[in-house]
Amino acid sequence: MKAIAYSIKPQEKECLAVANGKKHDLTLISNELNKWTVSYAQGKEVVIVSSYDILDREMLWELKNAGVKNIITRCKTTTHIDLKEATRMGLKVANAPDDDQSVAGIAKQTIRNLNAWEAGKCVGRACCCQSDCSVAAESNKS
Image (cartoon, rainbow, N blue to C red; front, top):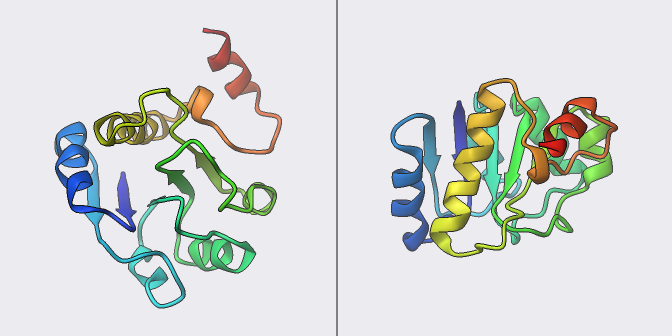
């Protein structure tokens, strides 16, 4: 999948590259996601953000207009994302729910989410969508 990761810290670059194993087309930038940098998401399927990147209604529309279909946040919390609006817009949202919140652990969770979406599967426990998804229910049973 084509993805762009915003707000990347130096220590995250290597972990994401190793976890990715050159499978996905990742663009890693240190810039935060905002009205001046949202254009970098043009043509990407996935945007990967930190808890410092605010995805309110306006930003979600900017991302959707850029062609983004999926959002991954590199943390457990999703308070920085308007999940109801994202669901209304048909955007899929995932987080990093595992207890391992180390830089390497979050990188692995991020790539696992990309792999699942690329395979047409639900991200399971990482799913933050507000819709009733029978696929998510099935994957959470296993």
